[in-house]
Image 1: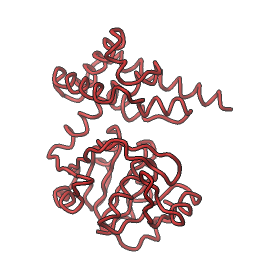
Image 2: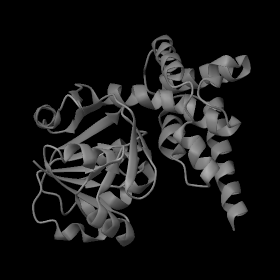
Image 3: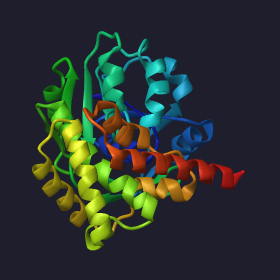
Image 4: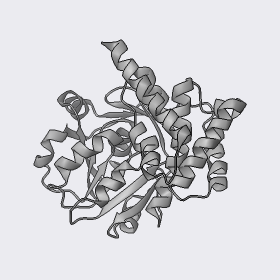
Amino acid sequence: MRITVIGAGAIGLLAAAKLSSMHQVQLLTRTNVQAELISAKGIRLDGETIHIKAITLDDLYTVQSTDLYIVCTKQYDVKSVWDKLVSHAAAPVVFLQNGMAHTDMLRSAAFDYPIIVGSVEQGALRVDQQSVLHTGKAVIRLANLTGNSAEMLVKHLHDPNFPFLLEKNWHRMLGKKLIANAVINPLTAIYRVKNGELLERPAFCAIAQKLCEEAAEALDFDFAEQWVYVRQIIMATKGNRSSMLKDIEAGRKTEVESISGYVQKHAKRAVPYTDFVYYSILGLTRQQERTSL
């Protein structure tokens, strides 16, 4: 397949490098500097160099023909990418983001090609603009948001070394992960702790349970089932520092709007614990911005 990967963060670099072993892949980056670096020196994946063509997102209009677009940007960049892509795409589009805010936007938009959403369970760490480490080997799950292309795509994309799995229910697939993110990400970022400490400290665990309860009710999930799942994720990643914690420490914008903000938007009653972590993350982010000035 001819695949255009949009976004050169950790997941974008990983996906482009892995898929290029079986497909013709082109990578779209935010800056000319990164595009030129990758085009000249390739992507470094776990020390191996994979040569691939890269251009900037602003040059999207030059992409003559592709069988698939895969959008790997952060959630807060999806809207700007979609504005460029919506009138240009003539092939299925896969969105691989944390959170669920993009589903509201996409379901209200007008277009005539299939949209597929994904849940990434692979672990990746971007070292620099061209280098990425594959830190956790797992799967990418795909489900139809519109159309019925997901099954075909899974068959074409699946590889034992980089597996794709089909899910029938996009809301359940994304919601399950969002609930875990709504618990783990903001708490670890606020308290500056690794994931495992959320269960090791009773006070943190109590707040985590309340956040899980609010998120599960907002998304119409069973709380007891989701709390078991969240605990499993915390234990499996107990030594990890969440992406939101890393963003706060680096003074970067977080994805709290598409995670905690999504819970707020879809809640049927007051969600005080979610409100607390949402506004706390916004405050910490703005504090970091002020400190850097």
